[in-house]
Amino acid sequence: LREVEPRAASAVLQGAGLHFSVGGNPYAARGGGANEPSLPSFARSLRRLYEGFLQLRSLERLRVCAVHGSLVGGAIAGCLHADSVVAEAGTTFEHGNLTRGVCPLGLLSRSLIARVGRDRAFALYLRSETLDARAARALGLVEEVVERGGVAALHARAVARARELAAVRID
Image 1 (cartoon, one colour):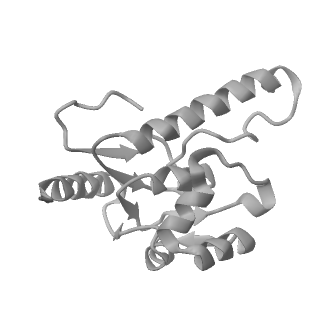
Image 2 (image 1 turned 90 degrees about the horizontal axis):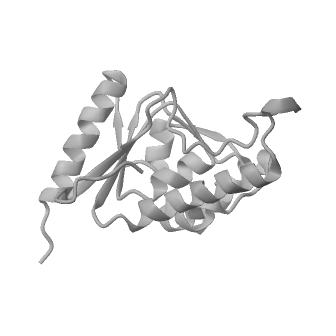
């Protein structure tokens, strides 16, 4: 996580690339040779990834996640640590663990059940289906879908949502 303004009541988490990703793709360097990470190197990268999830989870401000592109596994776990999730209309969500193997990093199992309920979470685990943004909203993974304007409109809406949430005072 980048530094967050200490006085900020909320924060927006958004990916910078083509997809919202937490960077935990163990298949990225497949093929062997010099580009293949060593097991200790890979283990260190997973530890850094897990520490990032813990930082996000313990961030003492409202968190809004702006998602776009394809979210698989850990990316879904990342957005589930937010208080609100806003998705660009073309976003897809795939749990992906049925075909890739289960990895408990990011507390995905626990967070998914908390967000959508046990039955829906198990269905996602077992079917490994890909959901579009509207289906993710109907399931409860996403609060809002930005229909037009692409990533720029998504970012603007996420910032506005963060301000809306920060304006609500609980006494």
